[in-house]
Amino acid sequence: MIHSTDPKIAALIQAEQERQATGMEFIASENYQSKAVLEAQSSVFANKYSEWTPGRRYYGGQENTDLMEQLAIDRAKALFGSDHANVQALSWAAANVCIYAGLLQPGDTVLGMDLTHWGHLTHGHPVTFMGKIFNFVRYGMKDISTGEIDFEGIRAMAHEHKPKIILAGFSAYPRELDYAKFAEIANEVWAVAMADMSHIGGLIAGGVLANPFDAGFQVMMTTTHKSLRGPRGSLILSKGTVGNPLKKPEDTVENIPTRIDRAVFPGVQWGPHMNTIAGIAVALHEANTESFKTYAQQTIDNAKAMAEEFLSRGYKLVTWWTDNHMIVLDFSWTNINGSVAEKSLDVLGISTSKSTIPDDPNPPFRPSGLRIWTPAMTTRGLKEDEIKTIVGWMDSAFKHHDKEDILTGLQAEVEIMSKAFPSPSV
Image (cartoon, rainbow, N blue to C red; front, top):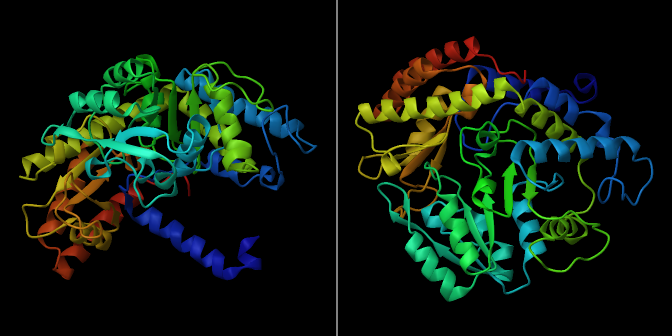
């Protein structure tokens, strides 16, 4: 047992369990896994090296890993309506790199959302490695107050730059995207329509948000640890014919599944983390249930209740509403910023993340926004009434961010509610 072999790490694990049990999680990249998912991750699959894909491993002893990974693949395909799923990519960033490596040549162009309008770093920011390899051009919102995407601008840029990929996706966008318009423009310029659904994959699986494949997309990526409630990993889902990854296919749209498989291995990654894939398989099984659909809808309902309560208290939301699981508070017109707001909530035991707002005048570590999402605390059973109470605590914390006695009193209330809604992970 870890308690007897490494008491220092054991103490830190215990401390983290206590932090999670007595506090609340509203950070947009976090959720709570079930005990079944955690058990799969800590299973003996962690001991096995399984290079390549089921039925085509380079090493022996794969009779169980092949069956387990194929289960994960089949469950992902059924849940999202894809022709293929690669379950080996290690994370959000790694999955996007694998997609680019499979579908692009160095210097090819990708049209994606600008980071200043809530695109992701992996959508071509110059600081990233892929930003040095590929040519990224960026679109944004036409109307920041509503979140309306500038589709006229996207169409003009697509015809001018002839991108190989048109990417729909975001890191902090609180509205639903019009996938049909993205697909229509991609078809006009013979580009691949790619959806980065890292944050909302679970809500798509739960049927409460639109599925880009229904609008004609060829590729979709989602992480597995956010709204899908699985381990830290990702899925690369695609349409097309699944071929033998040992043979290089022609660079056609129909061969996208095989091109992606070859990009994951041997192109970008080597041995997959089989224990993580086991956890993904369990999470996908859990996601294909009526209880998960109920959870997904409650997540949306909680986000809308949070938005409504903040608005009733005089706060400004970026785009003024939410269609999904998150809101972004805009403090640009107040005497605090997102960093101050985040730190005040940390004292209460409420974890959130500071966030830039579109065209933010402030720097990234002192931005004007605060991003809050509802999936994790919905997993713990909170509903609209509890969410509105929590917004009241947040409101008090923002207004009294420099008053330690008030923040300490609020922390006690947060702890009481937290213990009443235990995490399924501990």
